[in-house]
Length: 473
Image (cartoon, rainbow, N blue to C red):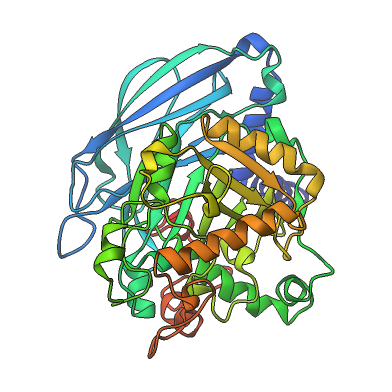
């Protein structure tokens, strides 16, 4: 009898070990999909139409819904946040190449909670990728009395994969190139800021990264002291945790974010406009106000992140960089690897020293000067041609110049950009480098207020729980 009991216990243990992790099971499913013949792959276009009948998740107000879609847990799409509605309409599109015909599309719907890293989990749908319009019931957590939580609507278009070898680049994002501008109320509350431009971050989802870069990733620079304090030794752990939390604050997805799609050069140029005041409560002269819809001569810090293939950036003079060892680590959320990183700036053809505000921006050919100026990751300059190819592929019609950080032309161009900002646009010196306004609290000093509502280490909730902390990005 004891042998039988032992056998049963062993079988149960083995079964639990095999299926305890749902993500591992999904990955096995995805791998089986990739074992199929090339004819079993398709290129798909999904239109996420909207949802209806969502439940109220809070006592006061309605809901601020958004969703996270995945294909076999291999690629992810995160929507915009719709404000104060139980019947959101998104009409957002997602194109993915080389998807196995029998892939599973899962869409999880959340209610965004402002000022916290957590979001209320509403429920999810699972469906196939057969072409056609689909309406699926949103199913909530198993332990809730009411599991039916509305209906989700989407449309799928499908065609045989165009690539001759679809297994080479499976689940390959193919647009559209969406962007978000983050000036969240969370950051405003924690740092006493308003919608000032120097407190904004941007994110764009790029296509074709693996096709162009292959597997060449940039590891953090082990010879750079600031990077050592973040990534090396036991004392680096609290440093990383603080930077990761600051990243979540800055890139938090909220109803106040700006969302859009890059369809041409004019869309990129509009993102690079001066906008408004750079600092909180900053007085703007009439001259500055008149230039708010013109391209700003500014330097930006960027990374191309591996986890979601996004181009993340902010002005290099952003005040939230104060007290952080690395600008690039803040953007990458302390990732040990990035595709690439550095700085960039827009300029009229030939440089800012060849430009006058008497010229209209629409009459000028704009250039995008990008480099590898990042001590944290020290990107290989031999990959600059690939960086240029990637940006030309994503932003056709925009002239791209990819220059090494030691290139004299880069130094000249950066200097001309700064001089034009100071001399012609009334930008002050303190806007060019991270500085705090008088009485302003640094972001680093307020991190605890954000983190105290997060789950304890080792206690992350899953999709079946009330909240989902990973859905901020």
